[in-house]
Length: 222
Length: 243
Image (cartoon, rainbow over all chains, first blue to last red; front, side, top):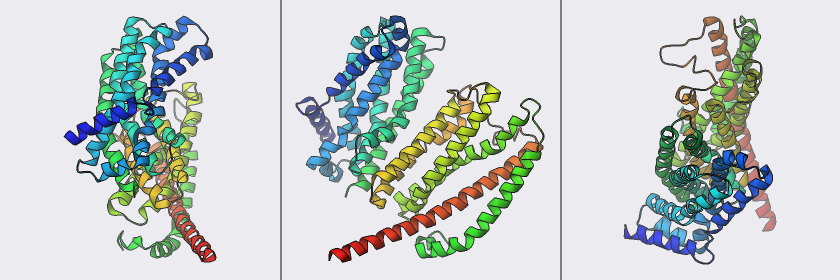
């Protein structure tokens, strides 16, 4: 247990310090959101309607962008081999790394959401709905994305391949995240149903992600 | 003859060389009968002749999921049993499955235009099949991204097993969500709801398309084995020239 806690602490520290690049995700999120009004036009009513979808897309792309570093940095300096050979089960170590990544790169996205909601003319209910769905949904993005990151690091390929592999897996999360936000804002569906499914997706990915990532690391690294 | 005996690629090649002509013949006959019966089937009282798209659409959609199932078993063969031909089977199935999925999407879209008034609707069944298609393409990209086949095989096996989660979602999407796509008619609790005049041609077509898949898959596996032999011969030649 202490080994896993140490792993989480180490990953968060590395991510937040110079060269870690966790906060670049937030900057990317901001930039994508700012780009949208230029593409759609500064029509505030339209932006209000599209706001939840824009925020969700931005968060999805931002989390995808930072996922690339989840295993590659450790692979480059050799610490990934130590983690694979370590006494802690690899599945738990993967889960710990994903948790640390979510704390360092995912939580800042949620914190930034209210500010970006202002830019998109979302009111308080809408912003809090989007932030709440992101809080529940981004772990699913991180934990399914981890599978892609583990595959990419064993193949020495990142970037576009990772995106191609991970994006289809994240579509259900996107669907129910946006559906829950829209339900909270406009109705007529209840907020609870898509929100519960979103929670379920996160819980499933919490189970499947570490096992798949660990299997891929175990079979792929040599 | 067990699965282990087939682990020897030479035995596999000689066996498939004997089996393939028969399989191809059976496929051709069944598909001919199926197409004839489908053409002779009565028009639907609501949909008219367009209902006949079903005879192509439904087998393709079934196979789109069935091929991923085959790939999942092959993935287990790669990861668990280390069967030497499992990754060949997995790799050979990907483009075929992608083609079936594409055909299912295209025929469904052509059927949707006269019946629903739209080529595409973001309904649960269609969206989940589209995701399946994207994952087939992702797998193809993964296979092509790495030049070492055994390394690519293990990565693709993990992704295949993760993607298998999509299969029950596709199957039950029409029951879980109230959508435009009709619910299951053939494989459902309480027996089929399809009339015999449609059911028999549909089943003949389904068997015909399944045999088509088996034929294409075995042929593609043979090609893949031969391709790997050529590759290792080329490597040997290159290393001899270097030495």
